[in-house]
Image 1: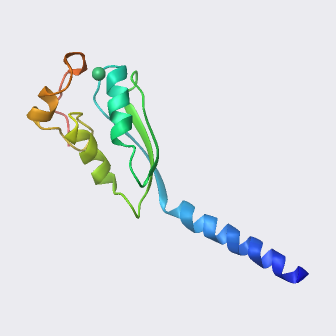
Image 2: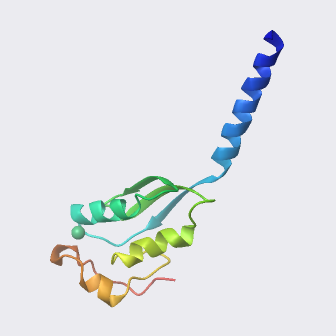
Length: 113
Ligand SMILES: [Cu+2]
């Protein structure tokens, strides 16, 4: 029985390696203003497949760790656009932007891909 233990260990390491390989970390710009935006952005990213999401009010940078098998980078951008926040890659509709709280109306720029 003793000789089986290392095999289990190797198997376990292999499995954790595989699941890590499916995770991807990204950072991108998301327009926003205040703490309310921070909550809104982070809540929108609180979905299955995203293990970490944090938006910084000062830098406007959003850091996300997600599982590439469950969610795509494009979907993440679309989620944020849907709630009114322009991202580097996806622009919110005027309707979504206008429905944001007054204090959340960040200055919109056109330099979005
Ligand atoms: Cu806000």
